[in-house]
Image (cartoon, rainbow, N blue to C red; front, side, top):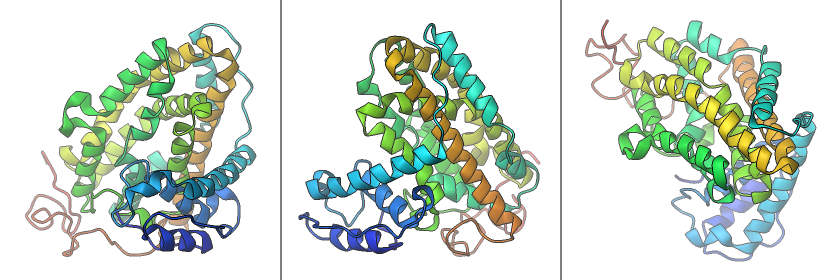
Length: 363
């Protein structure tokens, strides 16, 4: 992945220095401003700092990962992001102490209370055209091409049943040891089916702050041991709200001509997440809260953060589309292959609608 274009004084400052050998950064400028969740400069800067703990950037020396002056900048950004989250996400009432079943019920009530807003999944299932579906996939690629990695930070910070439950979930996310079944690889197949560049981070420069925030919150929780309860709650909410939307995504993609390979990522989540929902809520979060009742409220807060950011993300996409504009930061179809028809050999070979770039199976 390459560094994208800066979005304000802070990212301009950081990117200029990150391409040089590691050194003391000195005083960094303030982000461009605005509420932290929607601050383009802040969210891109924070994403960049976090990415150094994942795959990194091609032009950035790996020694930057632990450069103290960069960590100091990250710490300042994290405090601002945490303040923005606290303002946008009221802390839910603490779950009553007791058995794992009580935590599972508290999580279920939280998810149910968050339901009822505009449904992005319904729109994609029934109304989206191919370009809108592509946009949705571009947004999601920033997380799905590293799927499972941010939540995996919790494994060495847990013990007992909660740790075993998280490992069980993550093992499925990583394909049970089969590279081609890793969820990140299944998502690559979806991107290829839609004629999109499936390389890691290819679309980073196109996604807005709210999309970056949905990923940054997981890294924030994952990279700090003090947030391990929130990280588990985030994963639980993620799993508990995944199965039905993914069924709708699969139907929508098939409506637009997607074949089984393009839809397999969504099909897999319909089945896997129905199981993961129970493991995450009861075996993982329930066991963790029973072992650490002092952190039970953090579990629910992490779930609330996931639900709130997902709502803000959906509102951004649907609001943009209702106004007839792209939900991405730039118009056009960068990342689509040069002939405009998706992967070579699938655009006008009789296997899919003209110009869709999709191969249709069994039609």
